[in-house]
Length: 156
Ligand SMILES: O=C(O)CCC(=O)C(=O)O
Ligand SMILES: [Fe+2]
Image (cartoon, rainbow, N blue to C red; front, side, top):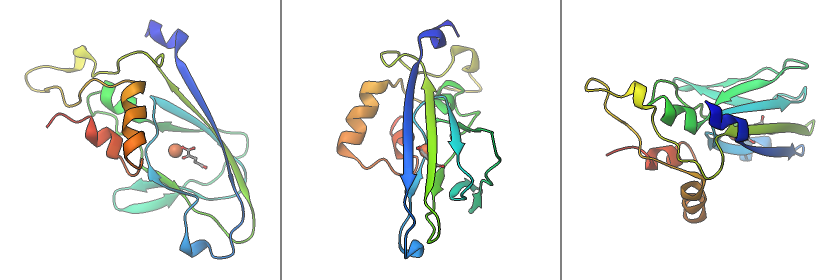
């Protein structure tokens, strides 16, 4: 898509200090990412987990590599064929951890909508249009947990 040439990028740097009681908290609660794709660089300390079926699976750090996550916009654009990945971060008592997440999408003012090529009588449209303003409005009044923003964009 041409629009990606002027697309948006959000860069998030996370630092998780070691925690004396790691079982009592989370580094980041379960959520899915804003955007089409996230490129994530994690250091050598484990902590990231993705939800696979009903289990939380640790994403083993691989040196000099990115973890690529599907975000909510790709789920919307693909009309649900690709699912944004629910993930969370654990803390540990021994080491602090750093990660850098780069979230990529269309320009902030663009509407994100299911691709018309994927919609037909057998596959009706499943998500409403959304944009950065709707995301900001949503997180101003709700906690961004689980996949609740994406759920709010589902057609009823
Ligand atoms: O620290 C990580 O590995 C993941 C961070 C994350 O999920 C985020 O910044 O959205
Ligand atoms: Fe994330």
